[in-house]
Length: 276
Image (cartoon, rainbow, N blue to C red):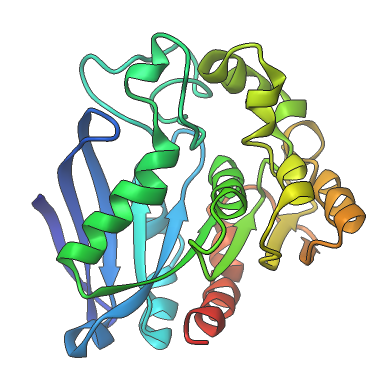
């Protein structure tokens, strides 16, 4: 690994590293915030997955999360949103290719060569972090928009891997909305069963672990009706008895102003589970 940023922040350190990823076959960056408590011993970690067009920088520079992570003694780990670099497949537009990995393992050419974000986030990155930093294997996961979809799906697909899960403005039913349909058709092909394996509204029905889900959604979100549709997750959870707290927040949009307004509550939610 190569450390490329190192900044003091709320008594801890906000760093960014680059490393060669075997899962993705390229050089990846991730950000990690180590709270002041990490100087005295390992701390649990919250993994944050960002949305379309984002990278490892958006959350650490806009959300104001380090303050709350320092209060609760939690590390923050923020991967990039896709593989990057020369030779990595890309596409026109913001919603496919680099910056839009959708946290799936692609099976279709040319994407399958590098786009294995599920394995990177679930397996490779935590193994790297837990081996090289004062971070325990007590993990939580959260994210925004495409990253909210990722957080829900990774938690539902991997029982026992995470102590808690939350999301801001998640794409809850990617198989039924344009963003997800475009990405899934490219990355996974035409087999709808393969799509279902990365759709939170489908996965809650077969989840072997009833990990409580916390979702915040702004009711003034410009993508609410066309792309996010949180009521689909509510209906799926109600049908199967999966614990879900869906909070519609009046006046909030899709931006990081929304995330910054409620990230403290989410980190407190995860801290309770991580310290249990």
